[in-house]
Length: 224
Figure (cartoon, rainbow, N blue to C red):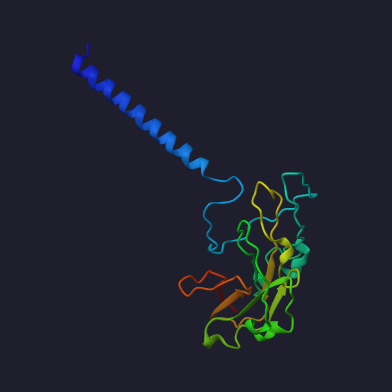
């Protein structure tokens, strides 16, 4: 049978842990009261690239008073990089495709370049007022002339502004962001090549401290 001091100690710890649990639950509830179901409190626009997830057709568009309408995006727009006819996306033939998207940022509305001077020369003649263009080139000087032809597939070969802003999963549960497919059809064989791709927009910045902000680079080594 427990002595009286032992009972007091047990009772103390029971009350102590109940109070700790109450404080924990209270702080979590207070935190949840500060969070919005529709907009994140803090946003980070930078995320490392990843492998594409399975692309699915989400059926007819539906919207009610609590949801925003969304635009369709058909994978057929990606041409030979759509994965419909070539499920290996050109890798077996040494003509790899990569699929590019802008990160989903709630309420972020990208702005098209206001002047052609900010664009690479090959893009200046094709600039469109409602499009975020993307452009790839060799990252290193020693790879000049080794990248070969680069093909772009998508709506205008960029990211159309009618898909933005993104309002979040609750308001746009069927949202599909636009994609751009980039195919490298004539890479030099048996060499490591580095390619850098950039998205161009008035409110898309770049940082030397983060190579994934507004751009990314990728390495290719195609064996003969």
